[in-house]
Length: 105
Image (tube, rainbow, N blue to C red; front, side):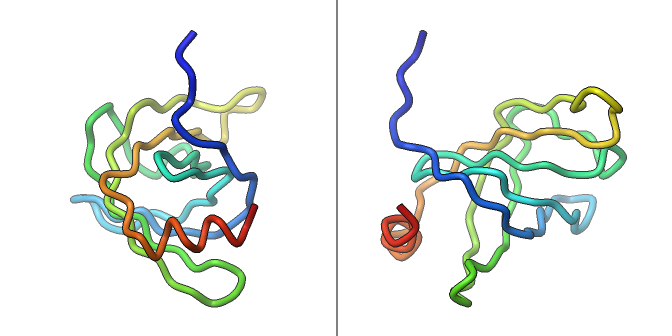
């Protein structure tokens, strides 16, 4: 089993994933300095590993964030299969994002 590089923080934050196919509404379920777990509509688009994604969201305190990410995995979420879960790696998280994470812990 591989150890995680940083602690996950459970949240429920609306986000936009921006890909070559446009914007896709989603929700951030948890995040850390190194990664993000997203829930999106099943039919939003196909997210294969290594797909680059720009993630835009706003913390509850109003601070806006733009992260460069890369899809690591995705799958349809049981039991009804109406959503998909998408695990993404954050590429070079900016310092302002890491500082904002510390305030959420």
